[in-house]
Length: 249
Image (tube, rainbow, N blue to C red; front, side):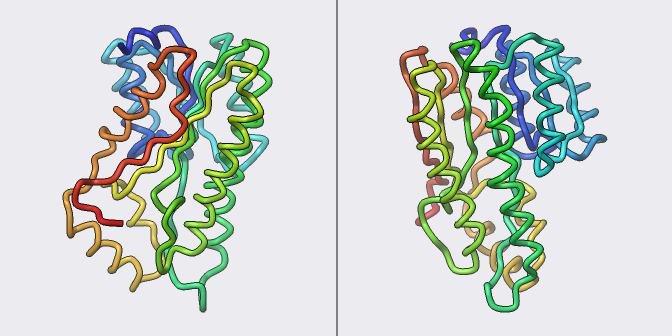
């Protein structure tokens, strides 16, 4: 099945850890040329070497997804080097949970800049390439928080609801160009997201919640992404909602 992806070119944002890292590895195994985008160069270098050691084709490009100029440069570099862009995995994201009252509003800006604007910048940059090709697949990583609002997740949920709305409008706009759009909404996944929460009480609550169940692994989401990407060209998997078996909400 994954042979359908051989020799395609993908950009994976937030590739330095978690779902992005697992997806980059899965795509490389499937024969995709993978461009790794993230801010942590040391991790990108390590992952790039791992993929090369396994026979994959990869390039690592330091990118702050919240910086539109850097995002445009990322896309231009990939197109210049490989001549095409078939897949965009908009994975970069942060989850800075906490109460609204007394919040550090810089956390809000970080989430909006990365989760929403960064995703939009990358999409905006690749669309001319994909339209010229008359093909492409944009896959946006959202969250169950884009469907179900939770206490202490007001702004994070708002960003993920925004991803859902943007993705559906995008799908309607580009379907005539043979460009597919998929949104993936993971539940609880064992990644670094919780570690980045700045509000101590909320971070403790999140760690307790994560510890109450067998969480999903990043590889579980990567497998779902490969499933969506490997469907025939006339099939667009619009949404994938994936929760751990033990997660109730």
